[in-house]
Every structure is written in C-alpha cells, then in structure tokens.
Image 1: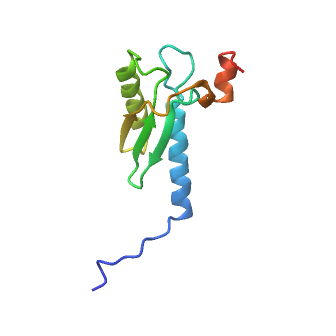
Image 2 (image 1 turned 90 degrees about the vertical axis):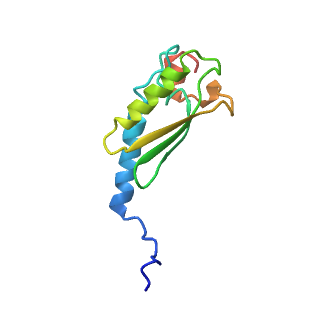
Length: 119
C-alpha cells in the first residue's frame, strides 16, 4: 500500500565521493579542450559557467566563448560534448552556449593569466 510513497534516501558517502570523482574527471576532460584562437584550455579560460551532473550521470554544461561571433563556435561546442561524453561513467552531455553574462578576462584562472602574461 505504501509502495507509491518512498522516502528519498540520503546519498551514501561513497555515492558522493563517486560523483565528486566523476566531476573531477569531467573537469580534466574540459582542460583538454582548447580555444582555437588562444593557447589556453576552455576551463581555465573561464568559459564554463555551470557544470551539473545528475544522479543518472547525465551532464549539463552552460558555457560561453570569448567572442559571440566566433567562427569556430560549433567546433568548440561539439568538441566539449565529445570530450565530456568520452569520460567513463558519463551517459550523455547537453551543452548550452550562452553569451550572458559576457565573458571577460576576470573569469580566467590564475594559471591562464600567467600563461598568457596577463597577471
């Protein structure tokens, strides 16, 4: 009789650790994708605005580009999707390309700033 009503289980500690490890692996994959015009990976450039992984290991990424009129936009988005879906454990990836807020160099990591001599 109570089959339709189930208490939501709290995630086990090992589930949390596995999810954190998967997110780290996704970030490592994103760090292998480079902006075609800038010799820095898209993660350290600050092009990734949001990264979510659901319980079924579907990934959602909200990202931008350094310029809205980038002729390589489709290539970058396709490369990100492929890189993320190639991570073991990921079921699928949905990539939303947005241009608000507008990207600027304040989103770059310290490593990217140093690499480009902008520190």
